[in-house]
Amino acid sequence: MGGLGHQGAGVSAARWTPPRFLYHGTSEAAARRAVAEGLRPRGADRPGNWGGEVESNPECVYLTDVYGPYFASHAASGDERWAVLEIDRRRIDRGLLRPDEDCMEQGRRGLDPEPLRSLPMVARTRHYRERMDAFAYFWPNSLRALGTCGYRGTVPPGAIARVALYDPRAGSPVATGAIDPTITLMNHALCARKYSALTRWFLGDPANVEEFLMFDTLAPEHRALLAEQITVAAAALANRRGLEVLARPRAGWLVAVWPEPAVA
Image 1 (cartoon, rainbow, N blue to C red):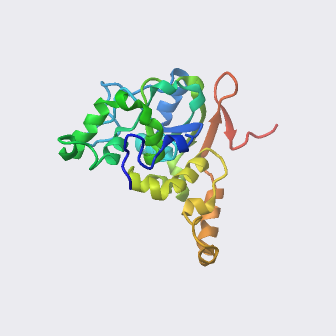
Image 2 (image 1 turned 60 degrees about the horizontal axis):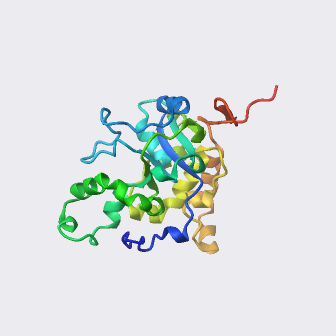
Image 3 (image 1 turned 120 degrees about the vertical axis):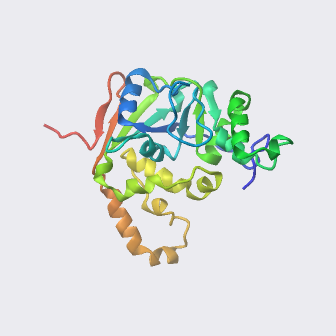
């Protein structure tokens, strides 16, 4: 896959409009705090959710257009409900958006000058994390290439449009499909439409079964051979047991919109 050159080498922001809505996966407890106080960066005094050698930037909230359920599954503990927050990009400060340092590191491999080019992955990731502000204009490229970007500040409560809550005890095979990605340029290039369909499923929106199975690019005669798998997957997508979606009206607290409230 092409690297992220100065103009994005194959990932040109000029030819692609970022989606209006972005997502943040977290726990139910953190989501409820965010609805009241805003979605805050974790800060230097709290550990990240990922135990790798390079922790996330403590000054950033990380957003995605496809991997919200995956990040939620890692943030929640035990039987706690997963939470996927839908963020309206029109209600946040665009000037605070940043590229994900992982995208910069992966996309620039073999392209950076020495000695940066020869540094190990951990050192290169730290290099880009420490210089995130200098690459602020790359955030659309990061979102398009890796499916993630950063927001350097607190996402205001008013930018949270919806919150999806999922009880993992429901054991949905659809939700299980959200926990298997690797956050890499290659995975996003090959599987983004699957995780986009999963995100729509979590938000109570229509989810295309062929995108979920990644059958949508197959020729009709090949799809016909997989009719049984499509039927089974469609039934799974139709069953949203364990899922609750809350939406914010013009003002006030979030209210349930999925399942549809019973009419008295």
